[in-house]
Image (tube, rainbow, N blue to C red):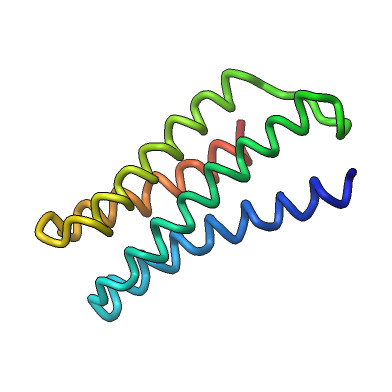
Length: 116
C-alpha cells in the first residue's frame, strides 16, 4: 500500500506544479487556456489531498495526521480551486490580481505542508 500512497503523493505534487505552470503561462503569454490547466490541477490537488488524508487516517500507511494542519490546507486548496474555477469559466473577471492570488495561495499551501 506504500506504493499507492507514494503514487498519490506524486499526483498531488503534479497538481501543485500544474497550478503554478498555469500562473506562469498566463503571465508570460496571456493565454486564457492556462486557466483550464489551473482548474484541473486544483481539482487534482483537492482529490489527491483527501485521498492522502484518508489513507493516513485509516492506518494504511505509518503516518500521523495533524487535523488542524489538514483543515487549513483544505481551506486554502478549496480557495485555489474556486479561484481557478472563476478564472476558467468567467473570462470577463480575469485580472492579474486573481491569478497572483491563486499562485500565492498555492505557494502558501506548499509552505504550510513543509514548515508546519
